[in-house]
Structures are given as structure tokens and as C-alpha cells.
Length: 164
Image (cartoon, rainbow, N blue to C red; front, top):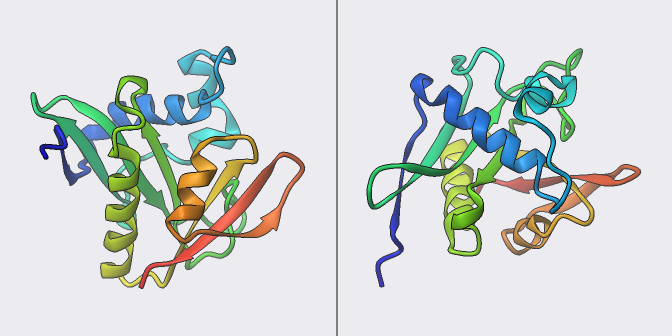
């Protein structure tokens, strides 16, 4: 069966699209759409994209059969003095995943997640982390793919998975 999409490594030229996917990830809740500029300028979100692609940044982009990007997953190494929402340590990359709404529930997110976990492992990272709101449907995907909650917040949790 043809999945209708392919994965490729993210490049520096993908920064604008990664911004689109960061906005999708932040606006996962129906009816709660924040404008692009608000999401990208928010201190909680801009750290995941500012200065893309630094030496330690890695990512994957999913493209449709026409070559148009439809989703992305990437990770960043964040410092202890400027941690991300899912920060657990300076040696653990934090991942971000976003999929265009028309491509959700078609295996794109799972393929991106699995591919990024594998990529992180080949880059020498033993674990990878993320932050997810408790009522986000993607939480079920993360659990199914081996992520476990290691820290609970008021409305969101930090989850971690081994890469091997």
C-alpha cells in the first residue's frame, strides 16, 4: 500500500516550514487558534526554532507525492539556563512534531516520530524528550511509541523514550 508521503532530512532552508509545523503543534486544540506571529514570538515556542539549523539540530520533513511538505519532526539541544517545556537535561534532545491537519491520522506523525527517534540514536543520543498537554490526542501516539511520563506539570507532562 502506498503511504502517499516520504521522509527526508530537514535542511536549513526548511525553517519557514518548521515554523508552520510549530504553529500547528501549538494550535492542536480545535477552536483555539493563535496567530502565527503570536506562537513564533512566544518565549515558550521560539526556542524550538530560533537560529535553525544549529550544529546539534536534526529533523525530518514528510512530503506528499507532489513533494510539498506536510509534516515535520525535529529536535534541539537546549541549555539548562534556557530549557524547553520538555527539558530533562542538557544531553537529551527535545523533540517537536507537527503535521498539517489534512495529513493527520494517515501515519505521517508516527513515521516522523519513529524516524526522528532512530536519527537521534544514530547521532549518539540515548534518550529523547518531549512535552505534551494531557488532553492532546498525540499523547496516545507517544505512549504507543514507548514514551513514558517522567515529570507532571499542571496541564502538561514531560515524556521520555530511549532511542535504542
